[in-house]
Each structure stands twice: as structure tokens, then as C-alpha cells.
Length: 527
Image (cartoon, rainbow, N blue to C red; front, side, top):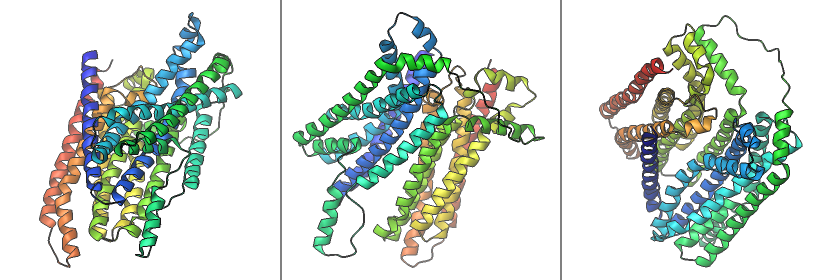
């Protein structure tokens, strides 16, 4: 089994790295020939991507640190051994950093590698970028752990709900601070004068000097220009920030960690009993949905990350709705709409992997209660995905319709994108709950670790493959329709669209039915 897991991890991670690299390579290869503006857009893509990474890493490290440093079941044993508290803290710090950062590394490496190769043409620079990349990741790791130690020292009863609310507020504050301190903007000049265009271009080149993501992008940009002085300067800033962040965590741990851990074990949170009306006399299926909904709302580890993703989607949607101000060509606007549909499909796949995939495993020791009750296995599977299907569908449809309506003025394109997105959401949820049942981990209580397993990686690869093939099926009829509209011609695309739709539905059925049937058989085999 260990060899199988190692092989699965290697294949899936390799597929992610190779697929991500080719995607970003094509993107940067398209931008590189564009004079002046191409490299600027690429630089801003790196800077904004790593700002998002910074927010997610800060949130992930903070929440993971609370569970690994204070609520892990093995802590009672570790603190009873001759191990010093500093050794225990070091072990848990490494565990927290790994589980919080590995997904970011898999996403960041292809992005940065493609950028360096397209604009620098030096493969050796990929090895040099690893130093600032690891330094960048260490900054939110140390800050997240330090925040937890301080909060638990101030209040031993500090809970996940309070932590999640604190981190969400801090993330919003960080976003506002980043926007306010950024000296550049994207207000395209309304005149063709050379002076206004030059001012606009120079404004885009100015960076924010206060945030680690900007230091990292400068290090990467310096490698493409062979400017080692700039690379060393910004790498030194990242290393200094990482050393300060980790040193602060160790300083606080040496002073407060053991005391705060002992206080958190003795000062248990008082039980509260809220008299909230329950919906009675519901069918069995909806009783299960109601139970899972209550568990979800009581787990800040779940809804806090969903809230952060929601905030980022709002920012994305607002920025996308401004695209017609800068791009007037209907063909490219329609292409953006199709790309936007694929991106929303990726978001639904991510949400399903993070929140739906762990649902069966999170039943843990209570799984025998469900299986010994008079509930069919189909009822159990369906109830696990129903709530998240509605939630994902609501998020996906609101974003894709609101953004595509502004991008294109063709109701036909908006309607097609909404239908495709709905099917993407259904397929993502069914895939996640099916593979979550097949690769169950009842001994694990952390949903992030469950989703990080071999089954989770396999689910992500299959889901992204399905989305990519589906979009390719609709490219030909939709592009034909758009070109005809631009030329003022009337073209009948009903037959090509019908063929694409049939193939799309056949592909969806294949990706849904096979894993679902395997999951039903797996339920009977679970002991």
C-alpha cells in the first residue's frame, strides 16, 4: 500500500507540474512577443498570484497550527516524554508548514518556471528561484504560528471560530492595505498622446515595496534580465523576512508554548446550549443534510476558508467586469468569456475537493452509526453532496453569469456558459464524493490532510482533465458563431453544437457514473 501511495503521489504531482507548466508556458509565450506591455502583464500576473498565495498561506498556517500545536491527539504523549518543548514545537512547526504549503509549491513552481524560461531563456535560473520561493513560504508560516501562540497565551479558550474570524478580518485588512499602498493603477488613458501612454506604462512598472509577493516577483524579474544585484537584494529581503518570522515563532514558543498548551488543556470551553428550533418530521435524506449543515457551520476550519475564497471571487468578478473598458474586440471578449467559464469550472473543482471530498472520512468513528441505521448507501452518498452541490452551484452561476453578461453582449454565449458551468459543478461534486468514499481515511480528522491524499490528487487531475476536454469540444462551434456575428453573417451552428453537446454529455456520464458505481460497491466493503 505504501508503494502504491508513493506511486500515486508521484504520478499525480508530476501530472500537475507538467500540465501547469505547459499551460503557463503557452500563456507567457503569447505575451512575450508583445512589446512593452507583454512583460508588464506577466510581471503583474506573478505579483498578484503570489499575493493570493500569501493570503491563503497565512490563513492555512494559522488554522493548521491551532490543530497541530494544541489539539493534536499525540501532544499528550509527546509532552509526557523527555523531549523538550522546543523539539516538540519544531516538529509541529515543520508539520504545519508542510501541510499548509505543499499545494502552493505545486502551483507556484510551474508558474515561475514558465515565466523564467519564456522571458529569461535560462533553465539554470529555475534553481536560483527556489531560494526566494522557500523564503517567501516561510514568512506566512512563521507569522501564522506566532499569531496562534499569542492568541492562545492571551486567551486559553481561544477557539477555531474566534481564530477564523480574526484571520478573515486580518486578510481583509491586508487586501485593503495592499490596494491603498499600491502606487499603480489600471486606468487606461483615453487619449492616444505618446506622453499619456508613457505615463501609463511607467505607472504599471512601479511596484509595492512593502509586501513579500512584490519582493519575490522582483527576484524572478531580475533573473530574466540577468540583474544579479536586484536578485540578491530582493532575495535578501525575503530571507530576512523569513528568518524574522520563524525566529519570532521560536521566541514566542520558548516563552509561552508549553504554558499556553497546558492552559488550553485545563481551561476547557464551557458548553453552551442554544435553544434553536429544529426542522422536525423531515424525510431521512433531509435529516442527514440538516446534520451535515450543522456540522459545517460549527467547524470554522471549513467555512472560514470558504469565506476567503468568496472574497477573492468577488474581487475577481469585479476586475473581470472592467475588462470591456480595456478590450473592445468582441472576439477576444467572447474568448475571455469561454476562458472565464473554464476558470469557474476549476473553482468548483477546487471547492468540491476541499469541502466535499473529506465528507465521508470526517464521519470517523460514527460511520458505523450510519451503516447500522436503516439508511441506504445511496441516501448516505447523496446527502453528503447535496448541500455543497447547491452551494457550489450558487457561487458558480452568480460569478459566471454576472461576469459574462458584462464581457459579451450575446445572450446565447451567456446561456451556454451557464449550462456548462452547472454541469461542471454537478460532475465535480459527484467525483469528489465518489473518490472520497473510495479513498476513505476515517482515522484522520483534518479535512485539509484528507484532501491532500493520493485520492484527492487523483480526483483533482481527473476533474481538471474533464474540464479541459469539455471546453475543447465547444471551442469550434462557439468560435464559428462569433466570427459569423462579427462579419454580419448568419450561420447555422445547430448541428456542430448538437454534436459537441452529445459528446459533452457522454463524457460527463463517463466521468460521473463509473466512480459513483465503484463508490457504492466500496461502501459495502468498508469495515
